[in-house]
Image (cartoon, rainbow, N blue to C red):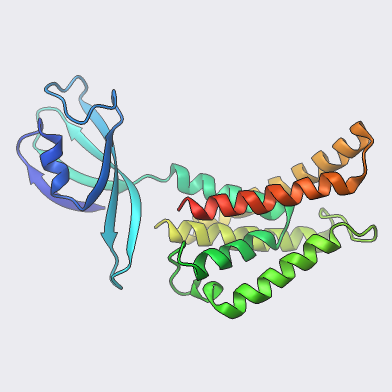
Length: 235
């Protein structure tokens, strides 16, 4: 919770927002920046604020601002968790498709400064982690096309996806200012969903269209890689 200031005049939204380190703000109700009337007892605003962390690194957080009619204007901020929850689930889902692709992409994102990860997750942004995880991800992409590779739903593949899904889910949650536990749980749920949905979709498409498995596998590769990069680039 960020209690920034008390403002007695609820009419001037701009003046209130200037007191906070806001870089952008948006009135969800009718998308109007300021209003002379308060049609609802509770109006919710969405503000993108930039706040300085103790180590002087800046993090962007979506927050909500509540205004109760008849009361003094108090800009109290609460992080919006909708996108955070979705991203943690989705990165886990992509881990269900390719277990090592999301960790490799997360490593690159942390290494390039896209994700602000502190201990105990900061190690993933090291040069060694980037190289090792990238090589492992590449090896998995190749092994996935081999006929003797075990099914992803077999215990070894399933466990690997649960671990990497939970880990990358936690990384995205922490980088967004959320909690580690929720990120792990959502990442694991996403990994389970991605594992079985991906398996069913791949085998079903190959059987229905009677096409070589490699075409579907390559498409799945692109989804896992592109989707993972999209998520880390949006935080």
